Image (cartoon, rainbow, N blue to C red; front, side, top):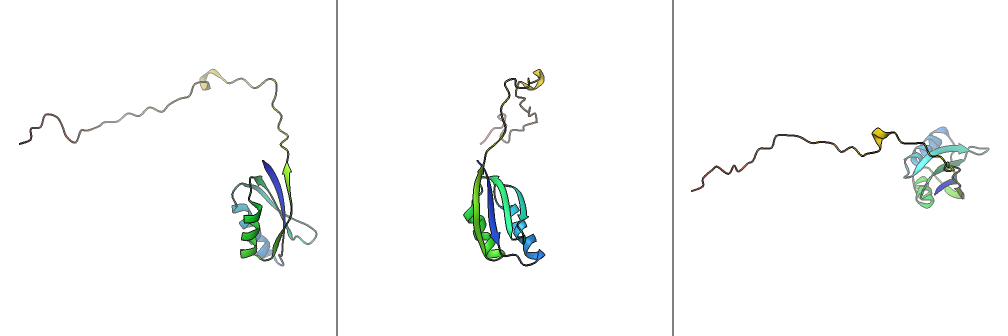
Length: 114
């Protein structure tokens, strides 16, 4: 489920904007981050299964006052074609790696224990 989250953050200077973008970009599931709004105080995050409450909490801790403005689900516009592209014959079968190596037995059987 792809979603778009808009968070209003108190950012007075470029240093805080940079820090807010860095925090949002490091969040799990985020695919894109942008700063929007008239006064550039909104962080717009797009991604899959992004925890908006956790992201807002970390922005509050590290940048300043932050509130969630909106969370929207984005519909995926990818439509499956009726005629899928054919797979070439060389890639139809899964190729397993072959492992070869010399193995030495730590306890050879020709030893005699007394």
